[in-house]
Length: 86
Image 1 (cartoon, rainbow, N blue to C red):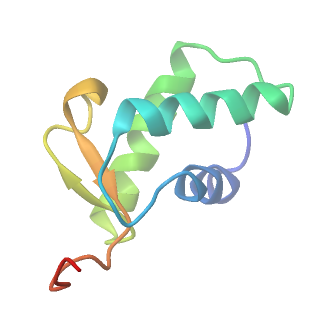
Image 2 (image 1 turned 90 degrees about the horizontal axis):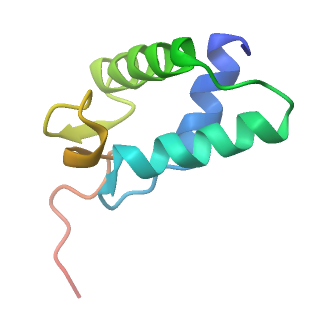
């Protein structure tokens, strides 16, 4: 597995200021990891869950729903609050 800080940067690189399913972020992250020659295992999912929770806890991501249920939750980068749709 890659260092935590690198994984965080990678995971955040797939996030946007609009809501995206956690499953999509996981899939994009996994694909990038595989592209780097890193094998995806059950432990990868555990680390992804932990890092996503840490990023939400630190305010680097916002979340809707239970982020452990990837298909039924969403995350985004902070910044959309208070904006009026144009």
